[in-house]
Image (cartoon, rainbow, N blue to C red):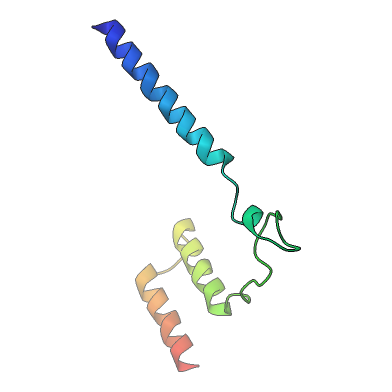
Length: 88
């Protein structure tokens, strides 16, 4: 019984490793393109613009909350920030 289980586990692991290997060996989308950009790795040429400043303010509020430096609740502070943004 133990030999059968070990064999089954071994076959399952071999199938899993083979499947993962095939997925890793598949060419990327960039490699399938034609033209001067074919085969290049990295982000596409047209990236979105920078995030608005209020996004940085939200990150700062969350960081302050996690560090314990925020007075009051995170929800209230985010609500106040949203009110400031919508009123601008």
